[in-house]
Image 1 (tube, each protein chain N blue to C red):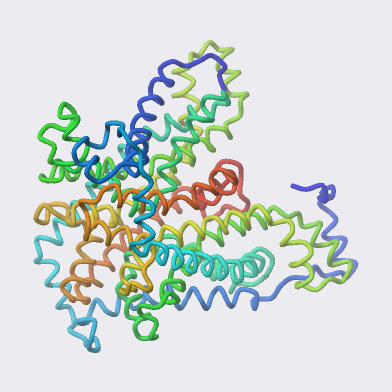
Image 2: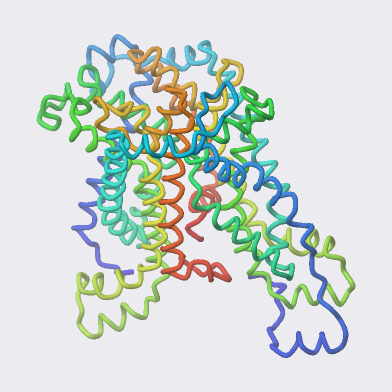
Length: 272
Length: 310
């Protein structure tokens, strides 16, 4: 790009920084003050004394259970995605015949299906299957709905493997399974890390499926916990916001240490 | 790609074939688990939503057919008509507000100066929050009594933004922008980095300034990125739900009852799942048509390899 400083663009980005930064500042500072201090001094002031009690309260309010449930959902969703997507992508890239083309089209169409649109029949299917109010009933639809993007990303990565390599393996008389394990998987590492991050984010931040498909305290996930907290104790803003901070903490840690993988996972559909 | 890749010799494959060495390929069976799973939990519900839209179902007893009753009811329902308008308005507002900002920020962030990298890292943070968290935070911040309006009266007027339709639509648009601009900025940043530098050098030699370069090179080169970005914005806009549920509950009155929220209300609050399904079907059809149109229009489905950028 140009090497001259562009003052106008710099100014614009500073304005945006204020728009993004101010709420984040309020969010962080609010969690470190007492509820009474928040309501008397307002969110923008800097509190005279800081406290960690909001964070401790969050855990005594059952937030630990929500955290654990969310973790179970996330790990299971990533597990399902990792088991079914790589073989599918391998077949899409390497298998021949019309069937596989049709399958790929179906998954592409899946990109356009909004979860909101199928939530009523999903409720029906999950209830009929006896999975209502079980974590598994949240895990299955969440995993299914991250398949299209994950498939698209991974087929993209696998298409980049040169045909010569497959031919070399074929010369050695390798079976499709050996080709998959020794060649395709090792060369798809970047795509695999993207789909792990993408599906983990979907599961961690998912709200609609848990909202509709669960109801008990014992199956509550973090996002639902935030929503309930707001409807029940809306006045305790510092308590609520500290739960928000805790809910994004794991993602933030990943962001600090594996920014590239996270960005790629987030861009999902957007290519690389 | 990797140090393994051999020199590509185009005749190689043919020679190998002729020599009778077939390339080992996986069978369809590799795709079966994912396909069955996807059919059960994504395609089957999609088919069911169409079926359920012709039934009356309270969520407890079994659904039974009632023909076109849901549809005729919806056609004459002013809230439904209004919800479609509101959905379209919010979608258009989303595209119109987010696109220019994310193009400018994205092109700016594509530069390699150090301060840009630091700022981009901060700009990115809203994307890490779930939609639920974003809505919860903004609701607290916009609270007329305990939020920012009390401290910044010059900015918020009387402070009760969510008390009027205009204010609520403004808030929903702003929160959507706050939440999603980073994602589109990223897309445009990737797109801008993929533009060949040679074009700018040539333009500079011809004496084109920064502004002309932006309009004559950068924008046309970002066309495909813009298509991808707008598809995401439109599908996201049509299915706006979390922010409405948490920030406005469709109110004041039904002033921000968008289609997705109306569907939720009809189904899970009024237990009229037939009507809910009919609304959902409308959403699916619109979202699919728009996506298909854009995919056709941009040749997205012909993507055989992930090119740089988009």
